[in-house]
Image 1 (cartoon, rainbow, N blue to C red):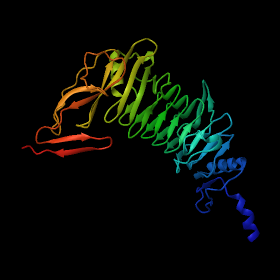
Image 2: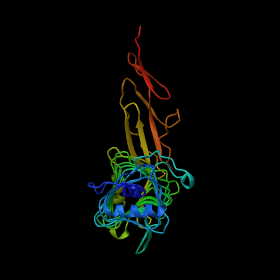
Image 3: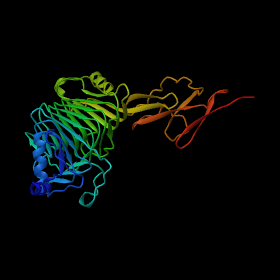
Image 4: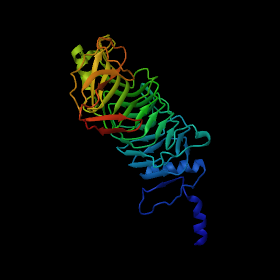
Length: 390
């Protein structure tokens, strides 16, 4: 019996699975395996379903196919594809959840330039009829679900996440450095957190799909995205299924309607004004157009921020027009409104100025009135002192 136990020790895997709770595997963070053994074990445990946790960096050459519900904890490690296919593929109505329990873990050696924490990289994607290299990191088949809660997805060709009639819920993690961060074909994309940045073609591409942003979701910092931070193509109806009720967009949104739908100028304006609502923040540019006809509305955003009243108001202004002055804010905490000013400026904004780029204006107020409170801002705090007049 002692000999059997000793011989069994090298079987410790490169990851832990809790798919079989009646016979859980035991592992330590220091456990290592040859790359081929680690990849084989990872493939087997993912196919079995349950929870899988990486305990070392793993390179694979074949797609990991998810056919049962799986939670993949990257645990601060790198999962790299060396072949020319997708890293992960979800089918059979399964749900894949990706987490990262060590988001600050640094990488060394050939991975030292990758972001800290768990990383999925190297995927080339899957070819579909008329579409090539989609879902480099994760390919979602019809009626499947991906939940991204942590980790970084970067360095994958084509579109990193492909939603083919499926559902993608992003509550954390980062998608960066891709051609297209998320590509949705008749799918549903719910973004409540996390970041999509640094994409070369489009941050998000939605084709006849549904996309909502809320919570702390952020899409921006895609300066090279030639078709926009968010690109929506509609062929079925005259309204858009893009809705931003929270989160932040910093960049460009482009919505294109198929010409045969015959949207009017008023339809295009209505679509643009329907995108951002409630607590959504949009700092950038939105263009809604009718195919290639040249019929479009082209807006810059103007955000009015009143830090004392703790309000933020969004206006969409047609390109090259001046923004209309809003209603004068009321006195708050004894501080009367004076004028609107651009960031870093002490002068009132001239509301006759045509806009060529997005604009943010801040409310400038007087100090607190007599008998009230003066405030003295510092680099990290704002203190209030009550004054007693003689």
